[in-house]
Image 1 (cartoon, one colour):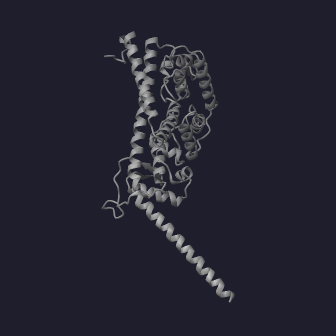
Image 2 (cartoon, rainbow, N blue to C red):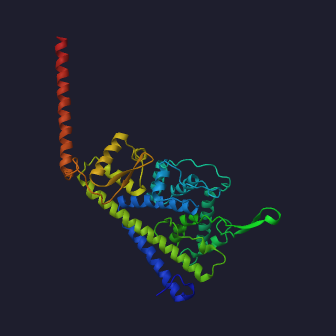
Image 3 (tube, one colour):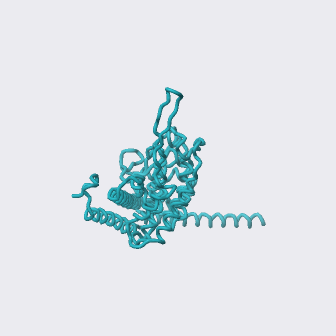
Length: 392
């Protein structure tokens, strides 16, 4: 058995086993994505975009929970409670990630990034003193690095040459800590200034581009967390560096595979529970957006789905009744979330809500349309008779 925590015990054969595990994880990810239907694919893409933004913000040293992220995105509160001048603006980081993914070659991912940009309304953060580097520049550097690695590639090594090139890059190579002193005379003291970590999130967005050129993936998917700062350090030996890189890539692939499974279950629950709603209802589309993007305010859903406040309210009521949505409050503002296995509710709160089949509801709508047409014909006939009588 391979102990990945003990690098001295990993020989060439063991490293090949670790590599094979990574290949299997990537292959399973590629196969599951290929079998996704359109509904589950959209939910998967929305979750991947959200994960990319969250990964970038946490690498930039912003500490928050998933619920705190939803509150910040909804414009209710700031992202990080205790901010320092060594953090870059979370709004600029988010905008850079969305701009890059918004032009992605895989259409569901591009549409998801554009949809995320529609609902994002983060609270403006204070101007930071050391916020002198643009995160878009980091993406340009990562893109250029990936293209140069692609052109000079031989056989596939699972983006290891991509990580090797990043180790020598002026932007992505980890910096050494610095020893500083302060005080005067006999009271001088020394302290160690820890370096700011490299923006490895930008490298992770292009890891799938390198793997696609190897023929490992069909789509150049972003792989959050696939490039770790530790494996880019110059003082890490070859065995540890390769093992760290392969382990990070495997974890990222497995995480995306879990997202595929969650998206598939969510899409199945939506189709099953919304089968009793009217065919003209957009509640299922609203449930898919909640399953993909996470908790949102009503006005965010209005912009995303293009419906009125009353229409969104009616859809949310329907989703809560069939157990697909729940509502919480943050600072007095309601946030609506998706639940795949929530209990169904009835109007009286005791017995289950009775629903008609889709065909019965369609027949009812058709009958009501026919009644409206007959009434309009009667109105026209009465109007015509009245005109004739007035002429006499």
